[in-house]
Image (cartoon, rainbow, N blue to C red):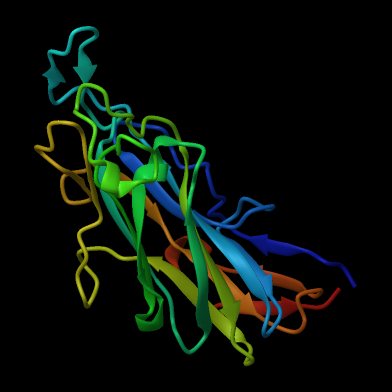
Amino acid sequence: MAIVLVATSGLAQTTTPGAGIDVEVYFPGSSENFTCVAPGASFWAYVWVSPGTGSETCSLACSPPAVAGGSGHLATGIVDVAHDVARLGYVASEDNPATAAVDGLIQNNGASGRVGWALAGDWNVDATPGSGLASPCTMGLLDVASWVYRIQYQAAGSIGSTLLHLRRPTDTVPFELSFADICGNPAFKTSNSGIDEVRDAIVMISNQCDSLIYADNLELGSVTRWSVVLG
């Protein structure tokens, strides 16, 4: 039997470059927005942020050089990933130490079904909030596409499919996914096209991950249209 995992679309890290910021959840190894895991298995999901290419909203007169604003030079941000606690258990979470995003702070509400991340600036000593924030003229900015934090989950014992959902203002419990440059006004949001692509991830929990699994309408976030195709 073939061992293949297929989807119609939704490959990670391939969001369309543009003025707006892109945010997505993906899985290491495959770099895709979907995965299949065995009941009881643990796995990591990564949150990817691609800064935009938007024009400057301001420029600080530092000496030297001037520090540019815009969607490509992010100083702050808030992200929140929700999960179904009946399907997935929270295990751990980590910042990415390889980028300026190391100065983000994990917001752990895993027992309540969400794990967030807040970028509040740039600490004088990386990853050490007690060291105080660097000035806007010297701070490191999130200006390259990269994962910013990752979350480890453990799958429940029962089979089924579930989403890792980037919370939005349109959710039943609203959350303002947003970023800002060094000037902070206006914030980059989905409502003003500052964020133009947001992609959830889908997890199939199955003891038959070695079957050919086909996920239809993955780009729509559907968790109801999985089918097993024997071959």
